[in-house]
Image (tube, rainbow, N blue to C red):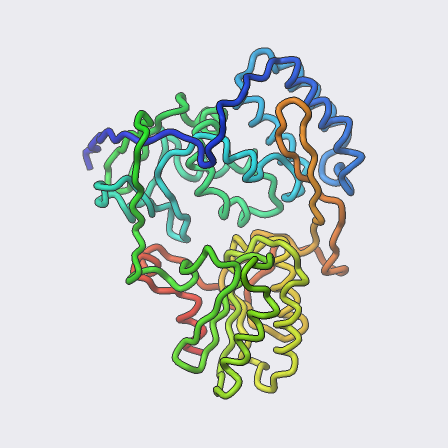
Length: 402
């Protein structure tokens, strides 16, 4: 099919509004890089479990020597590459606090089992929603995934899959990885033969989502809530637990009480806890729910937990706890988190650039006799784009059919 080139203007601004940063000189960058080298080994629980100290020091020293020849985004990207080799997904500068300062392409992507698709785009260009992206600037999605994996600390590819849509929007990272040549434009190649050139030269924009109130799958609803529930078919409880963090206006204990007060006189056949978007927090917050479920008589074979590539950290620990203690049936995709892992994250602020370095202070050994790279579901359910765009939540439909 003959390719069509369409030029579309996109806005270029930070996702968090901040004052224009003061330029950091070479000596300041060098001091910060050397600060990582001297401080982090003393802070991290075991920084050299995957990379030797000699290799770590060599890479730090090589970067120090390269600094005068590099742009700031290239320096940041090379620091991220060093952290990626540490092999601890909690440790690095890939956190939202740092990445929120980068320029975003104003297009939203989602990764499904059948490809990468546009799920948010400029108002007025609805025809490109739900279209598959197969390349950026001539680089295939598969090649870009491999490049992103070099700067994204991870213990399995499922976590990279989870973060991939956001990294596809980060102009500075894509430029530093030599995928694009400019920090304000790139070309998306679509599976239908169309090329879209995205260029940031406007200060106003509106993004349109491919999802509406009529076609949003259940797990993508109410994502601004850390926890919420609803009844499905009057006899199935659906509880989505998005963050292991207390909400300011409703404690988890009170939420839990409200839930069981409401269903106390109902015949509940299935109980679903959805952890597909849960990236962590405090693993103990869920305790009131687990205690009540332990006392219910009909939970055996009727408790389901949905997991996926964004199930991570304390969200992963909760999934394991529900399976081990309550016999929960796991449904969905393998987790981005690794069961035996590091955690209990602390923070280190670099003195000059003020970049936030997060690092682990504790090692968690969940399985003493094995070391799986992920928590596998009991039933693998594909997350396909066509179902999602129709509003079908495949995990929930599978559970309802059991």
